[in-house]
Length: 169
Image (cartoon, rainbow, N blue to C red; front, side, top):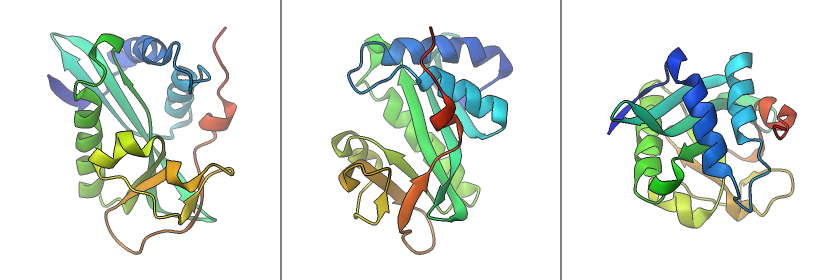
């Protein structure tokens, strides 16, 4: 399996993969593929990695800039992350996350935050200390990895794509 940066020729495959990966998931509103598309169109897709096997995209992870409170402090949001349905829970997602975190840390990011199940993301180094919030959600679902500087405190503000995306018809 090869982890690499997204290429223009991958866009349709990423869109299709993301729709398949989230189809039927109880926590999904079906907006993940439109979010990735809008992040890309708006220039807010800071890092987009794919997992490729035998020339086929089998995984994808998106990272975009976020604000915490009223400030931008070189923080990024993780997600959406998609893995081919038949390959989920096989380590592809974890490998994509690890690669993305390493790249962002090398580029000087202060950290990465996400909204998600702590039981899923804890093994990738994410934790919740109750200092971050997001739209009234239980703080245990609002997690972060800190690379440098003090631990942030405040509400997460993701790129506009997360609020603008609608379920495809």
